[in-house]
Length: 216
Image (cartoon, rainbow, N blue to C red; front, side, top):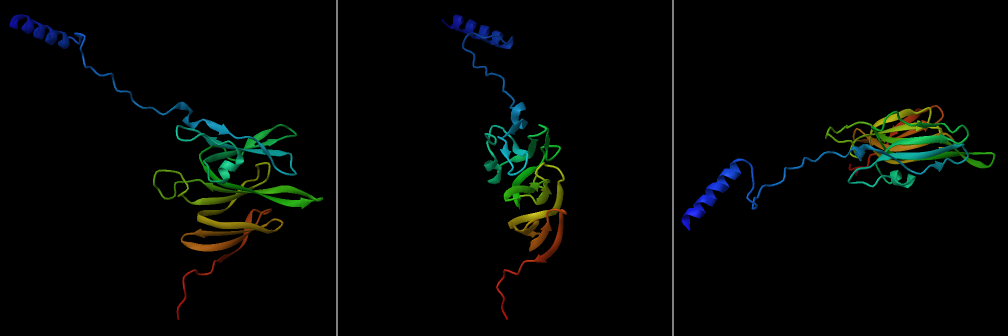
């Protein structure tokens, strides 16, 4: 019995050398290299929502991948979703345009400010909080980076940035038509600015009161 067993062993060795199988091979399948899905950067458009008193409608543009389901409505980006752009549609001419040329930024918030015109609330200004650069240089663009404050018309045109390198916002409020107060922290200092929404400019700024306890 030893000779047949030896012959079988020799045959198995020869077959293995030529890459053949005896029927009991344990050869593994080639490893598959993971690649990014082409759809991972596909823009995802939300439902359009009307901007009160104007002929314009607005929708968000997000991106979807294996870890996110995309954006379904305007409420998503208001809670900090990964909104990458805004699209504006003119219901009269049916023309449309984006707020930014590319989808490279993150829009943290877009707030609508209205003015009473002939008894009707009309959206006059859109104020956007945008993350545009990897300011902490961690290799990622996210909510840990500095914020830029910009203003546009409800058509998405006339976008102008009035504040940049903001670490955190503590609120913003329109105190009278076209005059917006913004409270924020920038370069480790808290401050407040008055913004003229029509002129797209800051008219006054002051530091916020020191929050540390004072001792004599």
